[in-house]
Image (tube, rainbow, N blue to C red; front, side):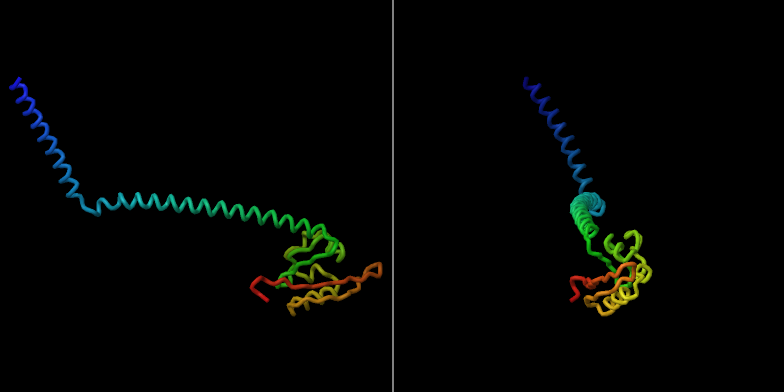
Length: 173
């Protein structure tokens, strides 16, 4: 049993020595690895984390943007429903004297036909009454609102009360 203990101790010492030698060799290998060889691995992991965070931020922004677009679309539909159901005529003209919008009442009053076909066309092509055209062009040039009664030259003796008001952006006075 003493001999068995000595043999076991010798085997244990030999295994310990081999294991220690193997560990020592691994440690030397790690010590000899240059930092520039290790860095790409760490950088790659960092980049993956940064890309993941960035992707999550983009997804959040995209979700918020989709919500805002949906809200704007709903508001636009509501405004168009209101404008299209009004009995007063609305004619929106841009700074280049092109029609941006004419509601059905405006096209009926001015005898223009379908209100959707005038978007983007010059004002002079859409409004045939010279007094109305003159009033609107003057309002565009002066950038101020005005009101005027204008006779409509049709089969009946009608007068049109026209009110012009330029729309200004929030940062303009």
